Length: 126
Image 1 (spheres, rainbow, N blue to C red):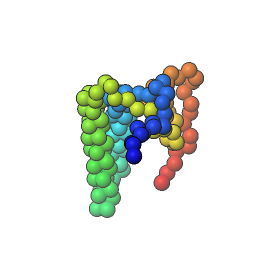
Image 2 (image 1 turned 60 degrees about the horizontal axis):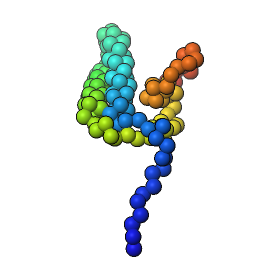
Image 3 (image 1 turned 120 degrees about the vertical axis):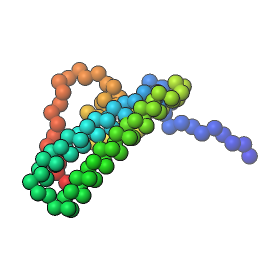
């Protein structure tokens, strides 16, 4: 019995991106998300200054933890980007397919914006 090499699902190298570059782009996205969390912390803190319950203060602490985690993950991805071999690349199309945030997918692909920036949809509250 002879082993045959595994076939890669995509052989078109035009859609490949260096792992280091993808990692750096992801780090920027996470840093941006962490900045949004920090802004929300300030807003929530201002709202809670009028007298927040212990339960709500615990939720504010969770928002702070989320901000720290996002920032930490951003730093890790940034370091991966600096230390990844230039030979490593991957197809980003299957990774980004189905990503609900079209503007994020566009930034990660680093596509040129030829049209005016699209207006975001309505804000979803959970």
